Each structure stands twice: as C-alpha cells, then as structure tokens.
Amino acid sequence: MINWLRKKTFLLKNKKTIYLIDSDEDKDFVIFHLEKEKILGLDTEFDWRTTYYPVLSLLQISSTDKIFLIDCIKCKKLDYLKELLEDKNKLVIFHSSRSDTTVLHTNLNIKIENIYDIQIAEKNISNGDILNYAAIVKKYFYTNLKKTETNSNWLKRPFSIEQLSYAADDVNYLIEIYTEQIKVLKKILKLNKAFKESKKESILGNQDLHLSRINKLKKPSKMEKTIFMWREDYAKELNIPTSYIFKNKDLKKLSLLCEVKELDHRKILNIFEKSLFAEDFINFFKN
Image (cartoon, rainbow, N blue to C red; front, side, top):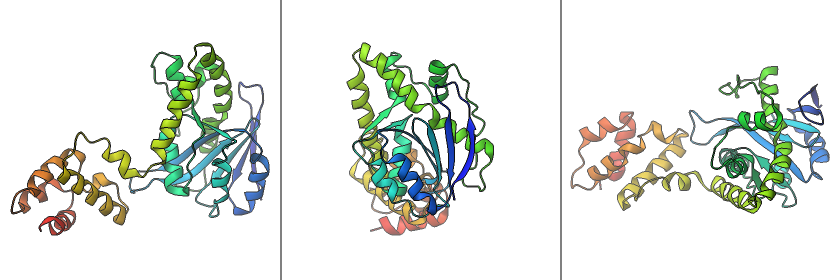
C-alpha cells in the first residue's frame, strides 16, 4: 500500500505530492505515474563508508507534480527501474551526477545516458563556478534548504520525517532549475556544451569502479597497475574500501619493494593496515 507522507509547499508554481515507496506491491503505481513522463529529476541516498560498493538506501525521483522516495532496502524487486530510467525518450536531471550514476550502475545495473547535470550547466553559466545544490536552489528560487541530514544514517529504519523531507528537497527543484537554466544557456550559446559535458559525466559514472580509480593515478608502472588490481580484487572479495588495505600514496613504495629479488616483509607490514592483508600480499607477490 502506498504511504502518503504529506503535501509540502515550496516556492514553486506547483506543490508536489510526496510518496514513500517501501513495498514491492507499489511497483505498478510508480510505473503508472512515471512511464509517460519525459523529464525526471533523480537523486540517491547511500552509504559508502565501510564497503567496496556503495549501498543504495533511497532513490528519489521527481516529476513536475510528484516525488517518489523509493526505499531500495525494503523493496527487493527493482528491475522495473532499469527500463524506466534507461528510456531514451526520457531526460533525467541530476545535480553532480557522477556519484549517483555510479551508485545506480553498481547497485541496479542501470546505465543512464540521456542526462542533464544542473551543476555542470551552472558552471557554464557562472564562468566556471562549481555550486552545490543548495546554492543553485537559492539562486533561482531564493530558498534556503536545510542540510542537517547530509551525514544522516541512511541505512537506519524507519526514516525520520526530517530525512524524508531532506530527500524530497534534493529532487524537488531539479526539473524547475533545468527549465530556468536552458533559457540562459540558449542565450549564451552553451546549451549543447552543457549536454555534452553531462553526457561525459554519465559515461564516467557508468564504468566499473576500478577504471575510474586507476585513471586517477599518474603514469603508473606495470607493477603499480598489477598491485592496484590485486587490491581491487581483494577489497571486492572482502567487501571493504580499498583504503582499508593500503592507501594510494603507498602504491609506489610497494611497487619498488616488489621489484627486488626478496620481499622485505618488515617494510611491507609497516605499510598495510592489518598484518593479514600484508601476509596475503606477500604470498601473492613472493614469486
């Protein structure tokens, strides 16, 4: 059964009805209201502190008059979202899309390509300034958003009203900001540029995690790449952040230690967070 939260008044032309979707029985309701929409706003709430992959908690989707807060932990059958969000006839609006597209890709195998990123668009409008969501909302709607739930525990249930209100705010303005921004972008002849840069972000978010991480390394050697991939596979197997094993700054040190005839066990132990990790590393690279 659909849990209706409340109507909330914003400084927009229309009020939006907010729905909490916390049961697989609500699937048809969501599809009915969103499948014919041409523009959607989207955001995610997730936890990525102690695991290799981010854990998706809440998926927020807005239309022009509704907001759906989909509990991705309580709802187990979310396959329908892939077809809904990958629909090429839909434009999906994000703010800072890289993390959201990464979370959707790793959790639900969703790859959204037809996107528009309001942060990227605003950067083109504001001569390079990178503004957070609250700042963009304030610019266009003179509204101060409460950010008290930014570091909230999104894995805890039930959600508080404050959490749900915060989550709804994060998508409530996306479509309306897009509408205002494209007027400006057309005037300054940067609309195509904003779309192209948004598309680039979606591609980066849709790739496997190790690809985006290894691309951040500065000219890694063959040995560094080998050690890097060992850490990725090891972290994946244990479902822990790669930094729990060793930090990126220690990659070159380990590479140099592996290029000698005999591994210096003591130096390797000093680099790793836990001796167990070091022992597994030594056993893998000793030959």
